[in-house]
Image 1 (tube, rainbow, N blue to C red):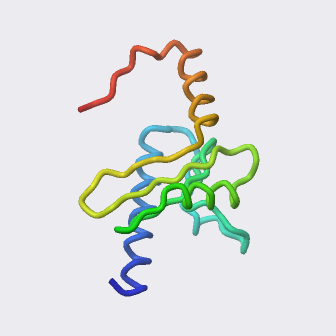
Image 2 (cartoon, rainbow, N blue to C red):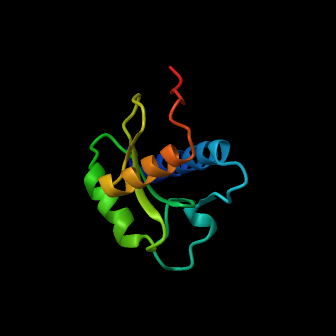
Length: 118
C-alpha cells in the first residue's frame, strides 16, 4: 500500500477509535488528533484520561507505540497504544502501573461483577 493509502487507513482507524470511545464514555469530550493539533505532537485520539496512539499496520510494534504515546503525552493522562492488524481485533497496550490504577478505580466503584460481551 502506498503512503496515501496507509494514511487513509490510519485516519479511518482513528475515527473508528474516537467513535468507540465516545460510545463507552458519554459526556467525555473525545477528540481525534487532527481536531486539536497546534504544531505540538498530539494524541491520535484524546479521550481523557487516555492519550491514545493508534497504529493500524501489518507489522506492529505495540511497545514502540506505547513509548511514543508516553513521550508525546501530558503527565496527567494515561498513555495507551491501540494497535490493529488487518482482519484481526485491535489490542490496547498500557503500562502495568497504569492498568492497576484502572483496576483499583474499577474495584473501588464496586464494578467487579461486570462481564465482557462475547
